[in-house]
Amino acid sequence: MSTQQTADPDDRELRRRLTGKAPVTDDKSLEEWRGVAAEDASEHEIQGRRSLFLKRRSRALLWDLLKPYKWLMLLLVGVVLVENAARLSIPLLVSRGIDIGIPPLQRDGVATILVQTILIMVVAVVIQTVSRIAFLQLSGKLGQDVLLELRRRMFKHFQKLDVAFHEKYTSGRVISRLTNDIDAIMELLANGFDGLITAALTLIGIGILLLTMDFHLGAVTLICFPLLMLLVRWFSRASSKNYRKVREMAALVIVQFVETMSGIRAVQSYRREPRNQALFNELADGYGRTNVRAMRLVAIFSPSVKLIGNVTIGVVLIYGGSRVLEGEMTVGVLVAFLLYLRQFFEPMQEISQFFNSFQSANSALEKMSGVLEEEPSVAEPTKPATLPDPHGHVRFDAVDFHYVAEAPVLPGLQLDIPAGQTVALVGTTGAGKTTIAKLMSRFYDPVGGTVSLDGVDLRHLSDVDLRRAVVMVTQENFMFDGTVADNILFGRPGATREEVVAAARAVGADTFIDEMADGYDTDVGKRGGRLSAGQRQLIAFARAFLADPAVLILDEATSSLDIPSERLVQQALRTVLADRTAVIIAHRLSTVEIADRVLVLEHGRILEDGPPAELTDVDGGRYAALHEAWVNSLA
Image 1 (cartoon, rainbow, N blue to C red):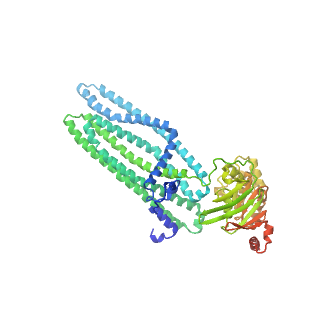
Image 2 (cartoon, rainbow, N blue to C red):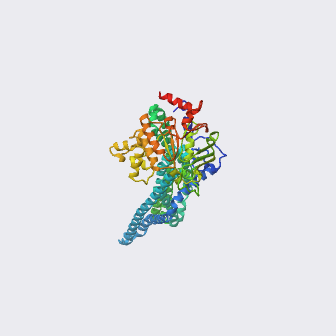
Image 3 (tube, helix red, strand yellow):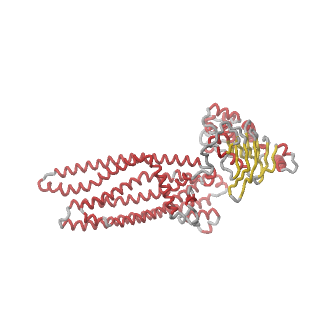
């Protein structure tokens, strides 16, 4: 894609992510790198103490996951030791068979020692096989238990994090954390640690055996060891940086895909397909290039290990052969040396695979540990106040709030809503209506002042008490995959079928539900796609009625409905709002008319406050003007 084609802001941001170039902010403290802050950082920023901080955090998470299984891990280490001891005994047995078993057979025709050696070798192979089977079964169970715990933690924590976090952290990233990153850790647990432990034990064991069998030839063999360590060190450092980029690019590809498919109607309506395709192609191309770089590192590492191995085997064959000819070494020992050398260099290939898995999993752990480290800005109190029987008295006391520090939304709002009162909020877009609803639901906390329910600051209430007392119904209430009854039950999961039917009947939803082929057991489809907008809204009201909150918030609950559907919803509203505090946010004044009190807002300030009938008669009043415009629109 040419530079001319990437001129708008979203492309500049895309290029920044693709190239990894971002301004280096040296003044950031490690404290500011907690949580998910590092996900948007470039490699220029993730260096030194910051890189160590991220690695320590991710390894702490891995250890925390493995800690409950420390005895099982010790058992696995024991099984691996047995397996490797059996495997490493084979070349020694071959040496014994050649040097001790064959000469009596040649001289006297006696094969006793050779047969014994072969039988011992068979036993060693059986032990190796049985221990390998035991290891794979035990490690497989350990890996799946750890992954299950990690999935549970991630899902629970994502639900715990506040709305403000989810508004910034896209659903594509959430999916990437729970799929792509989990898969990377599964690969590490399934194959990586096994390969590393086997390789480490093999290298140490063979090194000791070579020096024990023949010190001079063993010393010559181990000259290659420093070269191998330098090669491994280079590969580790290079792959660490690259795999962090791989995880980032994988997440960006998923984000772009999820956002495009989630908004497919808008994409097709505005003919955005070519543009989205171009963005996806660039991301996918970047992801592909990053993976190619990872493969290039492996392509250098693996042949280099083989080259060092083959050269070492050649040196051992020449030097060992000369020692055999001079009578300083037996043929069996030389054969054992060559067999051990093959086993010595094979694990280096496994180490390269381990580093592939480890660096990929480490990058995934960095991101998941960052999510788990995130604390909700709207946190539950450590010692919550009790609210056993909420009445619904809501009070805003000198509430200040802003989304951006330089742009206040509510400057010192003072508002008192008595229990049982229905209040309508009207005003232009950006007046602060929805912000008031979000503060009442405690999706956000005020920057200054307090929002209280029955005299208790919302920050002092547990989530259980708050969600039981305050419920919000929005313009597009989410319908979950399942039946009509399931979606109504969402308001109070422990309710009986009779209570579900009673709730639907109370808001007038039973009429259309009974007409459906399967009634309350009818599948609503993806996001309620098999229901009309009015039907979805009535189910949402039934859900709210079943929840029976003390405070009900309706945020543009009728704005997307046609006139017949709105009339049905209006009838349901009168039932739902009875005997509870209600806050209605609406542009349609037909919904506002049922309120006891109307607040006209502008820039977070209350300009008018009173019953709708009184405000309609105020000459030059804001509400009177809105009401007149609404009446004229109906003519």
